[in-house]
Image 1 (spheres, protein in one colour):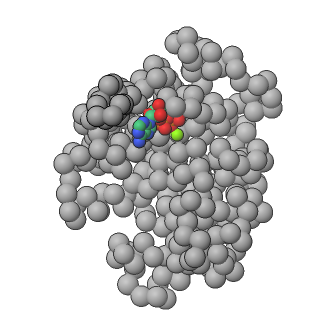
Image 2: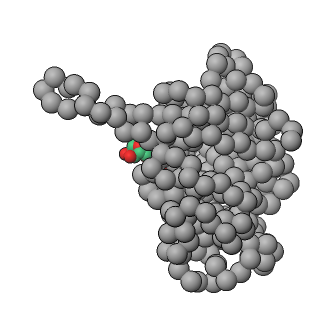
Image 3: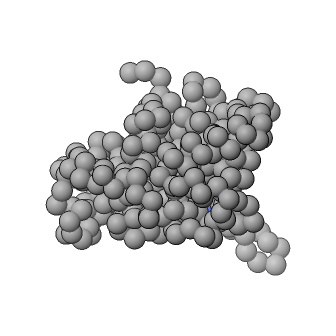
Length: 286
Ligand SMILES: Nc1ncnc2c1ncn2[C@@H]1O[C@H](COP(=O)(O)OP(=O)(O)O)[C@@H](O)[C@H]1O
Ligand SMILES: [Mg+2]
């Protein structure tokens, strides 16, 4: 096996609980409790589990948006937790995040050109204004938005289009890994499908890896190569996608599978879904 792109070993994140007049610590929430996993190049790994089980905290802690209680993280063969200064900035740029609510992460006062382009200047991926415009135009094309979006503001777009902008901002940084935290959870089913298709084709074209977090197993199934099932801060099961559906091991996984509605998504195999939806992957009305 080649060295994984991203490796998390025995990661823990406990939040203290304080009570009383003296604000004494009376316990802790074990949000992430000894989690280990790897992500290989060009692989899409999913984390599924009910709300509050620790999915977001796992992602945030692994990329140091939160300070881990303990554990190890390796990215591109380097000890990610000990990186400082320039090396940290450089490695951070290679890991991007896309969240559920695009409006919360886009700046409402800035045009799409600036929303996508400012970090490019900051990270010195481009040198001039013209390069910035050219690069952002190229990104807009890749995420299926018209060039006229450049001068528009985030609120002028639909939810699906805003998520395309967030994805565009992430890929503009030339990342190796994108963490998508409930990235399609707020979208209608048809728009979800378009965004999933976009993500899949971008991954193929740009050689990306994803950590795809969702509480929705049918969405996870559609996109992921491998699935981690999370329950109360722990990974209770890890399987290649189809295997998880044909032979789930853990009682909690079985419960998740049983709770799936018997709709169209479940009746089709993921490959069929993706190829069927491919044609609409670049629709701009999402
Ligand atoms: N900053 C925080 N302080 C205290 N507890 C937190 C904090 N962030 C998350 N938690 C708790 O950690 C647990 C996991 O939360 P989270 O990672 O957001 O779950 P998920 O993303 O799976 O819905 C929850 O019990 C949540 O209340
Ligand atoms: Mg979450």
